[in-house]
Image (cartoon, rainbow, N blue to C red; front, side):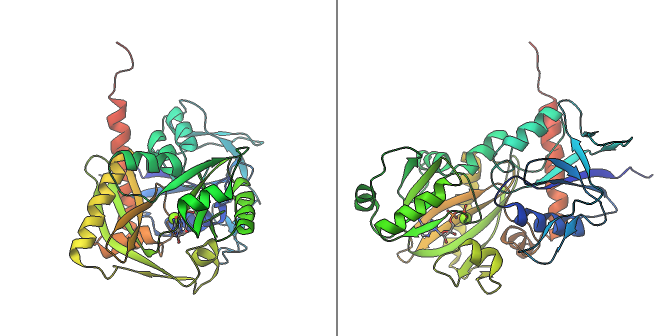
Amino acid sequence: MTHRKIRVGILFGGKSAEHEVSLQSAKNVADAIDRDKYGVSLIGIDKTGRWLLPDQSQYLLNATDPKLIALNRENERNVALVPQSGGELTNLSEGEFRSAVDVIFPILHGPFGEDGTVQGLLKLAGVPFVGAGVLGSAVGMDKDVSKRLLRHAGLPIARFTVLRDGDDIDFGRISADLGLPFFVKPANLGSSVGVHKVSDKSGFEDAIADAFGFDTKIIAEEFVDGRELECSVLGNRDPIASVVGEIVSNHDFYSYEAKYIDEQGAALEVPAKLPDETSDRLRALSIKAFEVLDCEGMARVDFFLKKDGTVLINEINTIPGFTKISMYPRLWDASGLSYKDLIDRLIGLAIERFEREQKLRNSY
Ligand SMILES: Nc1ncnc2c1ncn2[C@@H]1O[C@H](COP(=O)(O)OP(=O)(O)O)[C@@H](O)[C@H]1O
Ligand SMILES: [Mg+2]
């Protein structure tokens, strides 16, 4: 008996400062996905937010250079996904053309991708998709709201305060409250874009000017002197946690430069050298955070471990970096689930959730 291949749309790129990171993740997924089981359509989103079906055989330019990597705009088709289309892409370009997908794997980081906006569109379209739904995505993206929910659930986080564009912002009061140095970061972003370690008033002014360039809401947070540990969570109803990994950064902190530009910027230690008791604690906290923040499919939960043994949750990423050497897949690989099988599991979880939601009544 032969089955038709499941048509997977890899949705990548996006209208965010993390566009380039997404291009690399998408390429890795497209290269590794089981082609016997899945047919792949690469759907690129450019930096203005337009959806494109690029040339499927050459969808990237400078694919191996993180500084120059870009969507290939030659022979592209402009497409759209409209409500109730069930994965049928609408062609907005000249000429006859049909394309449809059964499930979408969004590999979009940051705003307009990881924050519930795309997830809302995919829900309206009526197509299953990988990862957290609208609420989990939106909450996970927002460092202010996610931290408040974690704190409300009794989970440990660092002290922070929210600053809004236009507020009367007083460096003296913030530094008296949080101590020096402290961190400033946009509420809704990732990849360390707009993140600054502040040690004086002029540094603070530069930091907030930059961070407010990316978001109208930013947070100031106490500096945590600790190891950076990360744990991967996978599942819908009964999520499981991977082994724990460590980021050993060679920069002042785990900056954009350290993450993506400087090849020696940071080392990923998988698994982290930790007492079993500590990694068990981190795994249990990861699953709790995943549930508290209404995640589904996948998430990576990031921690600080202080010298005195205190653990703080730094953040949750609902679409973590997904190249095959990124922490999320590496932690699964070290836990016995290969990159290829991980992709397969995530698509399975997307379809399982979609079918469950399809059974809900919409009239009474
Ligand atoms: N409160 C803090 N104390 C110490 N380091 C921090 C703090 N907040 C952020 N950092 C450093 O900045 C990096 C990026 O911050 P993070 O909150 O993880 O934002 P992003 O979503 O951009 O990854 C962290 O990995 C860490 O190295
Ligand atoms: Mg982070």
